[in-house]
Structure formats: structure tokens, C-alpha cells
Image 1: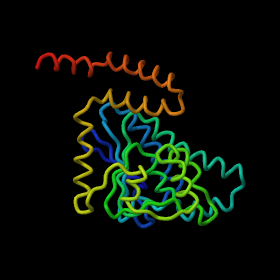
Image 2 (image 1 turned 90 degrees about the horizontal axis):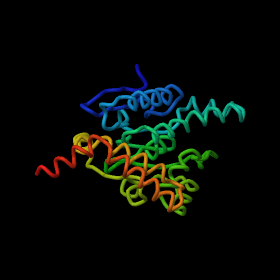
Image 3 (image 1 turned 90 degrees about the vertical axis):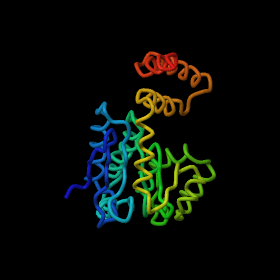
Length: 251
């Protein structure tokens, strides 16, 4: 059985974590499959967005028990190599040209919450549960903190990573970690409808917008303005923009 199911629905690539009996816990094989699938999707010029979800009752419960066992038996250099492999997954998500969207149901805990947080957009059921509980076993949600710190306030991030409590979808939305909450009964349909927005807007403009947003991070105000000007000029040269202007004048 494949650890990751890959299907297309029109211009959308669905990546489904497929270890339901393990609550879709992350292991080396699943992380490797996700990275490969994201790279392949990034190279497909027909795709508009990527959706990551989980099979069964949960989105993702974090690290697999075998992965935790491996961590406990490895030395620093081995653990560093393993951690860098996981950090590469977050880097790929951010560098993929098109939106990467998490559809969270059930539990998204530890590495699973990190995976959702690492996506560009998070959609959630009303009953989903989130949390970074690593501190409870002496571990640290260290890699996702690079993204968490950019998504929420410093004080909120401090509380989340040092107390390790679970929180609801409504709380996650109030923190800025969830974009939209949909009813459990209609979640699949609501997610599909949400994705269709990316069929109606310019693909090239979305790609430029994602690149601009993340490249601005950490820039000075003047540098960010200059990057904005350069992106603005690049957008004007695209076929989508030229066609859009023609349609505007032909109304």
C-alpha cells in the first residue's frame, strides 16, 4: 500500500497521507514521498493548486513510533541529518510555485500540526484539533517554529510551543493558523469549492504573488517596496495581464 495517494481533479493535485491505521504518522518513507510529489507537482504547468489531506479519521498525528525510536538511538550528527530532511519538506512547500493547501480533519498534532502550519493555506473542519505537544516529551517543535513565528505573535508562539496544549479549529483561526472553517458534513465539498477560486484567477499572478510574499520576509521597507515594483513590472509583461487588460477595454 502506498504511503501517499496522488490523484488529480482537474487542475488540482491531491496528496493524501495514506497511513490511516497509524493516524497518518510521518515516517521517512512518507516524508520522502511528499517531497517527491511536491517537486513533481511544481513542474506541472497545468496545475493551479496542491491539496494535502489525510486518509481515515485524522490529518496527521505527528512522528511515527519507529521514527521516535530512531531518534532516541541516533547520535547528534544522525539526528541533525534527519531533522534537515524534514526541514527540506517545509522549504519545498514554500518554494513550490502554486498554493499548497492543507485540508485538516480530526487531529493535526506535533509534526502533523507542523505540516499543516507549513502550508500556504489551512482549511479545517469545525471539530479538528491542533497542537504542538513536543515539549511534553522533552522534544521541541523546532523546525515549524520558523513558520509559526511568522504566522502568529511572538507571545502566542511562545505559549503554543512551551505549553504544548491542544486547541480547537476556532482557536487556531483566532491565532491566525487556519484560514477557513467548514462543517464536518460538507467539508469535502466545501474544500473543492474553495479550490475552484484558483481556476478563476490568473495562474501567473498567483505564482508571482506567492513568490513576492515570501521573498519580502525579513526585508527592509525600502527593499520590499523595490521588490514590489519589480514584481509589478514582471506581472505587466505576462500573457495573463495583457489579456486581462484587453478584456477590460473590450467591455
